[in-house]
Image (cartoon, rainbow, N blue to C red; front, side, top):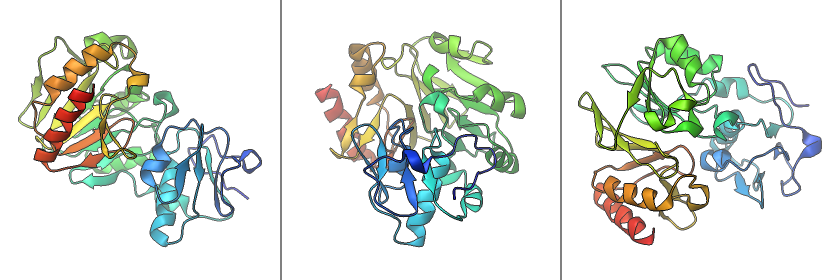
Amino acid sequence: MIHQLPGFDDMANFAKQVPENVAGEFFVDSTCIDCDACRQIAPSVFAQADATSFVAHQPQSPLQRVAALHALLCCPTGSIGCLGDNDAKSAMLDFPIVVEDPVFYCGFNSPKSFGGNSYFIRHPEGNWLVDSPKFIKPLVRKIEEFGGIQNIFLTHRDDVADASRFAEHFGAKRIIDRRELDSQPDAEIILDGDDPTHFGNDFTVIPTPGHSEGHCCLLFAELFLFTGDHLYWNRDDKQLDAFRDYCWYSWDVQRDAMRRLAQFSFEWILPGHGQRVRLPASTMAEQMAQLVDRM
């Protein structure tokens, strides 16, 4: 028996499970869109088949099981199932999950952004949301406890998801480049041009067009770089990478934007899609230079 979770309309169907799953408590069904979220969250449990994720190893420890439950909750299409009784309701309370204080991974990835990751930043001058997860009550309550949201930074048109609902609920201001404005036409703060824009001492919006015409990254505290669909860590090749197959506007423009971005110093890559990573600033700079050369 698979138990329905509050706030989740889509639940995995055991009868439609993919054939690659190993037998056991967790499974992935054929509605999976191969967004990679589960493989980021629980890499010891989930792996990649030709067009979906699958359960490669059933959890062998309490930590692995919690990670699998987190992946279940973050799956944008409800394609991960767990047989029998489980404590997924309790695992909901773990979100947002700290990446490194004061930055959190929101979870509850939205199908509206093809399962893109979103992040929450606690800040004494007002909290930030970077891109948007599902607007779901357990997460909203936790954000309320953290003091709400002042600004919602949207990297580009693909990952706005439920940003309007978060903005209305928290009275937050959405920040987006004018070239992406048709995805959030009533956004409160509109950015123009290709020069960086500073918000206080800690936040810098860096235009990085290429994936889309008005794509932007957000640099926080010269440490955390939120990269949307511009840049990610390739787990297989163990190097920084960009999604050439998913470059909708211009690869040449994206390469030039990557060269400009390489002039900034940071240690964390926190992408909307793809694996996040932390490297020493000097190593990150080397990786950026190598990526620009490859592009």
